[in-house]
Image 1 (cartoon, rainbow, N blue to C red):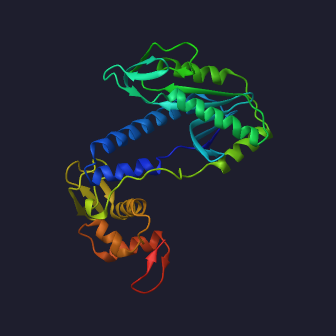
Image 2: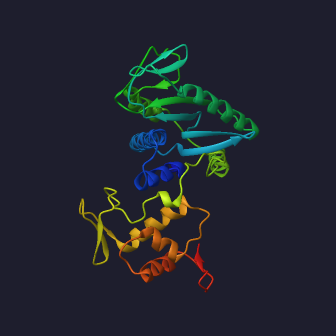
Image 3: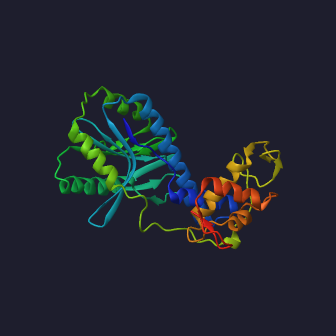
Length: 303
């Protein structure tokens, strides 16, 4: 049973919006593309788990927890009758090798962050959390490599690694293990959900300014700013995709709110952000329909 689904993080969405509206510096672009690739791998695993695992398990995705002021992320947590599985999903692609517990790219010979180190830290902190909650469960933590084009050389057999060729077998074997959940499992799952932190307090936001970003509604399909108004739709001149004007305005408003959380949601701000051949009254009508109007003067705003 899926108790918490997976959605794009604020960090990923912020970088995704910025990538469309500005030229990201090389380092930030590399980071953004890794975020997208990581999310893609997580979704791929979710679809596999959904198709194989049965209901007598609780599945919680994207848990951000805190123990003694230390924060840690769990990509997927699976609660079974006798075991809790912590799974760190990686979508690495290419050839890598381990040497003295360090991970290297075979192509560049550069050292990479070893996900096993991160996994061990998360597992230790999670066990501390269970102790604090005064509950006792066996915990098994694994790094799961989802990309079929990933190869890891010189990996010791005793490492908690699930290779791409083993993913289906791992889920199938897990599914074959008898599992009957009780109220204790349910209480633990609900407690973990209440302890989930919506955002890492020390997460770094990219540096950007309003004037740097290209204004306008872009195509939701191909991200082109070459759009026109056709009846009640935004039409992309590049790929031909259509989107209702109301939905396009709401999509742009969502971007503005995320990118500029300290700015008020006003008709004027969203109208300028959309920067499209629409009347300002159209933007106002959409905002009034989906947001709450505060105030009745020229200084009114929405929330």
